[in-house]
Amino acid sequence: MQTRMSKPEFIALIAMMFATIAFSIDAMLPAFPQIGAELSPQDVNRAQLILTAFVLGMGVGTFFTGPLSDAFGRKPVIYAGSALYIAAAALAWASSSLEVVLAARMLQGLGAAAPRVVALAIVRDLYVGREMARLMSIAMMIFTIFPAFAPMMGAGIIAFTGWRGIFLAFMLFSVITMLWMGLRLDEPLARENRRPFRLPLLWGAVVEMVTHPTVRLSIMVQTLCMGMLFTMLVMVQPVYDVIYDRADSFPFWFGAVALVSGSGSVLNAGLVVRLGMRRMVTWSLAAQLGLTSVVLALSTTGHEPFGLFVLWQCSVFFMAGTTLGNLNAIAMEPMGHIAGMAASVIGAISTVLAASIVAPIGLTFDGTLIPLATGLLIMSAVGYALILHMARVEARLEA
Image (tube, rainbow, N blue to C red; front, side, top):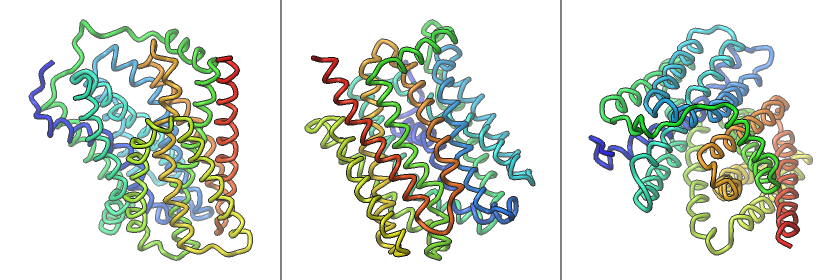
């Protein structure tokens, strides 16, 4: 399959598709105070639901976009998802009701799943073996750097246009991506290689995965790890604003933490071959359980040092880099015969369940770290217990 793009241009396009999710989440964080004050003055904390609504829609979209692109081609599915994303951003921009904004954000998440998921399939269509792995590594490296700058971009847009300008930026970002792909990339999936979309096959994959002990437990632990990451993302801006009175400098702190914690994926790549995926996850969750216990204990005494919170925030982002990829690989290992569909189902189930856990925790913010620390302590403890249980289950199966 030939493409008119050079490899650097192709990598840049794929990275931009990946970045749709990070931009849509992280650029919104500085807007929470303004949105809460304007659309939900009686309970400004409800503005956090803007993030979880997007994640919920993204999870649902992840379930379908991969199989749909196998049936109808990569570009048509990205066009459809991008069009939905743009229309939903326009709806949110024009809305005067938080409920409408939340519905629009859910639709945005549904649309954003298309470029994020289908971009992976495009790389597999055009490249194979080590070259595919190299291109994916470079694109993912660019993707991991982007969240460090997204809040600063969001804060800059808000300073000039108010919070509604963020949605105009989303629309422009998606239009540029769609035009770039449309003009420069040929359809990578030939008609003769397409497969019909069959809902019974998708449901069969769900049943097979949830009944397989290792896959089921891995999805549960992945859900909890994603839940910890999203809970921190949902509550981090109010923490900086209300507890530490650092709303103005929040984008810069967030960017610094994101850059430092991005090394988690790099460290994992270097250690996982020697230590194994399960051990990496077990150690990461144990460390998170210990640090979160310290934070909660200090919070209950009213002592919440800023330096400790920044360290803790960094550890949560770092943990995501040392757990999520490994857990996904553990779940995928027994599902090689349905790998593409399994990837969609695993991502969808874990993301939707994580969003369902995060939403009620975010609403409990009371001006202290106690709700955040309690939520993360429970999730890390349960995740740690489940990963240990997984080892025992597999030992029995191998005996």
